Amino acid sequence: MNAKEIIARRIAKEFNDGDFINLGFGIPNLSAAYTPENVHVILQAENGAMLFGPPPTPAEAKPNSSNSGGMPITMKPGASTFDGLTSFALIRGGHVDQTVLGALEVDQEGNIANWSIPGVLAPGMGGAMDLLVGAKRVIASIQHTDKKGNSKILKKCTLPLSAAHCLDLVITDKAVFGFQDGKFLLKETAPGVSVDDVLAITEGDVVVADDVHEMDI
Image (cartoon, rainbow, N blue to C red; front, side, top):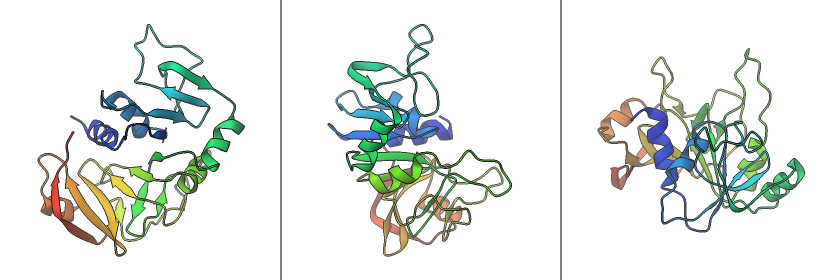
């Protein structure tokens, strides 16, 4: 199981029956494929789709039905598509129970940077800033380290922020973190990863929960 699949599978465990959930570009969109069978959620894409399911087969894919990353989606019975104004009215109106967004960096203050790297041309943050302040619960998904092994789980973000003090949960390929007293709260570790392993690759300050346990994926 690769890092992206670990994260996507763990994201889906946060889906609660009846939730209205926005999935962002990248790994969050992959989590739709792992929605538990007994959990019924309304998945929303910021580009204007509501009530979609797992990715379709190539034969079932329709060019006019896609998620925020432009990948094909399966529209469920009762699903709808709509314009950007309606989509963002739902987001800004506080109707989103949870949003799951990808990140470049997160820090122990609950800040997230997910749109800009200095010197690299970026199209902008898209709907991230609206989702980060409009959703009732915000989950960041991120690979724990970069290609050089440097931590992306930081004391303080170094990249331009998308929003400040907005995160409720961080899911990486190595761990799941909440927040406590201005520090990361280590709640879960990935299969085969120890608490010491997580601490060794995490720059931010970490409090280890009394009931820390292995991810259920």
